[in-house]
Image (cartoon, rainbow, N blue to C red):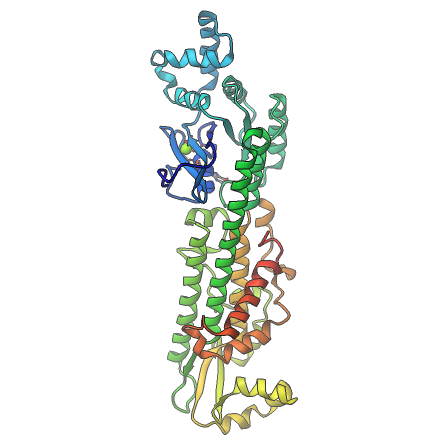
Length: 466
Ligand SMILES: Nc1nc2c(ncn2[C@@H]2O[C@H](COP(=O)(O)OP(=O)(O)OP(=O)(O)O)[C@@H](O)[C@H]2O)c(=O)[nH]1
Ligand SMILES: [Mg+2]
C-alpha cells in the first residue's frame, strides 16, 4: 500500500485488530484490503508475531490504518499478573495499569506477544475484537475482554466463522452483552462482501462519532468501487458469450463434421470459459483458498464439471436429452450458408417475413441440399445458455458472503436458472455477427447488447448489485 501520498484530508482512524490466536484477524484485514498478500495466514496458532500496519484509502485519502496484532494466548495468566501488579503500582485508571505493565514488560517475557497487543490498543482509536464463535465460552476469553477493556477504547466484537454456527453465535452475543458490548458485527472473512464491509464501517460510525463524515466518505467510495467491480465482471461475461456465440468454423468437404472439427470447437469453448473464470476470480481477488471455502466447483482455475458434460446442463436445469438423442457431438451446432446468407440469418429474415422458424425448419433439408459451398460449425444454443447461467452463478457467489444458507442454494433450483425472456433472440443476433468475435467495441449494436446483458447480470438477480 502506498502510504506517502499527499496529506490526507481527514485525521486517519487507527484500528487495532485484536483477539485470540487463530480467530481470523489477518484474514479479516486481507479481506478489507482485498489483498491476499497481506501478512501470513495459517491454521496454526501464533502466526502473526509482530504488529503490521496497512492503510485503507478513499481515493487518495488515507482513512483507516489497520494494525494486525499477534493473537492472545494465555490471557488468564496475564490478567492475574495485571491484578498482582495493580497492588504495587496503584494505577488510577485501568489504562495506567496497562502502561505500568508495558513500562516493565521486559520482566514478563512470557507475555511478549500480549504486550504488543496492549501497546497497540492503547495507541488506537478503536479495537476490533475478532471472535471465532465455534470456540466454547471459556474463562480465558472473558479475561481477554477484561484486559482489552482496560485500554479504555471502544471495542467492536466481530464474530467470525458464523456460517452454520447460529447457536454459538447467539451464546457469544449474550456473552459480549454481559461486558456491555452490545454493538457487534457478523463477518465471515472468507469472501469479500460489500454489505458486511459497509456494516462494519457503519458500526464504527456509531462508535466514533467524531469520525462520522470521514467514514461516510469511505463508505461512498467503496460502494462506487464495488459497483465498478461488479460491472467489470458482467462485461467480462458478455465478452465470453460473444466470443462463443460468434464462433464459427468452416467445415470442409461433404462428409460432414469430423471429430477433429468438434474437438477443436470444444477446446475453444473450454479455453474461453476458463479464461473468463480466471478473470472473474481475479476481479474479486479470489484465491484458491476462497474458492474452497466458498465451495465453488472450481479447481486449478477450471470448473470441475466440464461444460460439455450432460450433467453440467442438467445442473442448470437445461435439457440434455435432445442433443443426446440426435447423437450429435456435445455442443456442436451447424450453420449453413445458403445463397450467401447463413441459415441463422435466413431464419431471422424468414421470421421477419412472417415465415417463422417452424416453417423454415421443415425446409432445412432442402436448404441444406441447396447450399452453395459453405457449412459452418458453431456452438449450439444449449452450450451458450449454460455458459451464461454458469457465469451468472459464479458472479453471485463472488459477490456474496460465504454463508451456510448460501452454500445450501441448490444448483438445480429452477427459479435461479431461468434465462431472461429475450435470451434466445439475443443469442441469435450474436450468431449473425462473427466479426464481433475479435473487436466490436466501436459497434453501436454491440454496445447496446452489452448494456442489455450487463443489466441482466447485475439486476436480474437483485442480490448481485446492491
Ligand atoms: N472457514 C473459514 N476459515 C477462516 C475464516 N477466517 C479465517 N479462516 C481460517 O482460519 C485460520 C486462521 O486465520 P488467521 O487469519 O491466520 O488468524 P489470526 O487470528 O490472524 O491468527 P494469529 O495470527 O495466529 O493470531 C486460517 O486457516 C484461515 O484460512 C472464515 O471466516 N471462515
Ligand atoms: Mg494473524
